[in-house]
Length: 437
Ligand SMILES: NC(=O)c1ccc[n+]([C@@H]2O[C@H](COP(=O)([O-])OP(=O)(O)OC[C@H]3O[C@@H](n4cnc5c(N)ncnc54)[C@H](O)[C@@H]3O)[C@@H](O)[C@H]2O)c1
Image 1: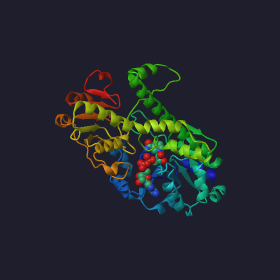
Image 2: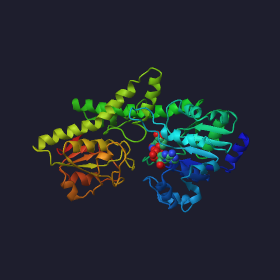
Image 3: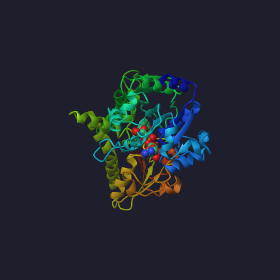
Image 4: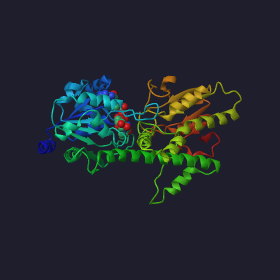
């Protein structure tokens, strides 16, 4: 059967389905469609499937016209899990957040695997793309009794972590190597052949756990380096050094250095979360990670640091602070995307409001703050326009996200005071109304 599957992959004779049509799942669906694969989508969120049937995108980086394939095709998009039984290859792109004690929240994956283990269909391939802790795939296989089917080769299991980079204009999935692992050799070969349909280079690992840990190392590298550069910024401020000039000159080193920029803290569904997955797995074996904790501490204190700095400056400027108005520019966790998950902007708003500042925000990608996430429930705001009147009407502007489409010169010209957490005004720090925070 294994040979037959390989043949079907090559002759494009398989039904593919993405489970979880979010930031990872929807772009993946597009790649399959471009590779002319018979692509389907399953999501519990009916708004998402409805929107796709109407041909409308709900992710800012994906244009509606790219979704023509799904327009009007009710049979390609579904909310009924039973329809998955008709599929040959199932890509699982479900959320893997943290529990309140910072342990991995595997509930989305477990509730999904709990249902599909009863599938009667033979020879399906399940490809997990969600970020998980090392050993998670094996735990899932054990917990949901998939071993028997896998051993009998009636099921194939692949783990391949996603390397999506939302908002990066030059990002190309095709040229980004894809790490692939399999439960056994057959699963691995099947996985490799599937990905070869739409990526140039597939990198295999010898175990599922090594592929899981690869993803965590990639994100840990980012979080530690962001922590390092944020701490470096604190030190530069103390020593009265220009961090942006230092980063620029260090970046001329053509080996052994990679540029990271300071900012208001971490956000998104990966970098603030994934290091805890690794630490959790490590702690179970008796070792508590040091770097992870230190960089996490530094990064998580950045929003509060910014709020304190703003307060101090404003205190010096005006005696009564209760009526002061602050406009946050950008709320997404990084530039050019509409993703506000874990964004430090919400903590900043919350803390400023606690100190009785009146806060507004502007973000061209996020028209309103929806409920449901940390701090979000406490702040109910809609994005306001960037106009001369609105800018003048606020005592201070705080740059939280450096979206490319924002006119920073216009803001500079029309604002009373600016706090810059992203270095967008790094060439103007001699201007008295701009403060780097
Ligand atoms: N966002 C990124 O840039 C990124 C990058 C690399 C890896 N990842 C990882 O990929 C995984 C998915 O992340 P995401 O950002 O796409 O999440 P997301 O929240 O954008 O998408 C998840 C989707 O799953 C759906 N869903 C939830 N429960 C479901 C269920 N039981 N059945 C079917 N659908 C269900 C949700 O409605 C949503 O559409 C996570 O493990 C994340 O860590 C994310």
